[in-house]
Length: 256
Image (cartoon, rainbow, N blue to C red; front, side, top):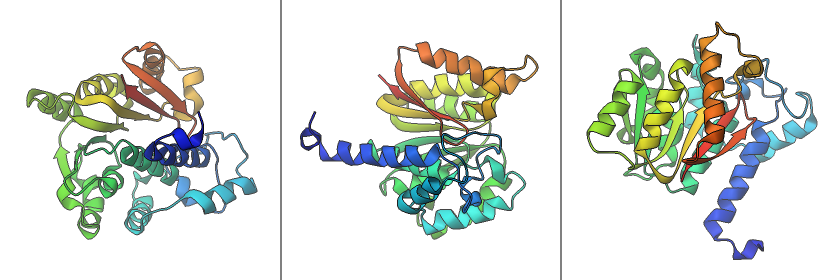
């Protein structure tokens, strides 16, 4: 189909997706902190020292100043490695804008990134189990003017998802990002699938788990859980999927 016959928002969104994807499958040398969320053992399609990677960074990443401030603060935290990489955060934000999302579920460490691209009446249900993690981001939520968009729930994410379902919010959310304890991934996925509307997106992080999914050890419950979900998603007729070799692997599940 000629490009001119494609709706403008789809063409723009596709271009954004392509740029972010290209950024994510590579690894850099000059800006190692930009990929601090990527396990060191991950392999990329182009070598870490490739000048092409530097070119892509220079010509695609548009990091919001507040996000940069949060990233630099988080790097110093003992659990800083758990935050998503900049390129992946950019992809998630572009997808949220592409589908004109207003309601988002965030199980992990991406609340500010989501809130920045939502409309003023948008809402992020941010699931966490530790108030200490949120204390890093909260002052920056306010500085960015998005504090009113973020509904932080300090409790097990399964409990929050069950409460949303019980309150009649099934099929009212546009986007969900899953990046938490791997043993619960299947349960998170199933509950998010009930909460997401048709045409909505579930993004599942760490689906390659540093390559350990190739030969999951029987005693590694986290890898076993991810591997089983990967196999399930391949055959799940309720969604269309794309697994991207970005950072530690991310699967996008589009609800049919």
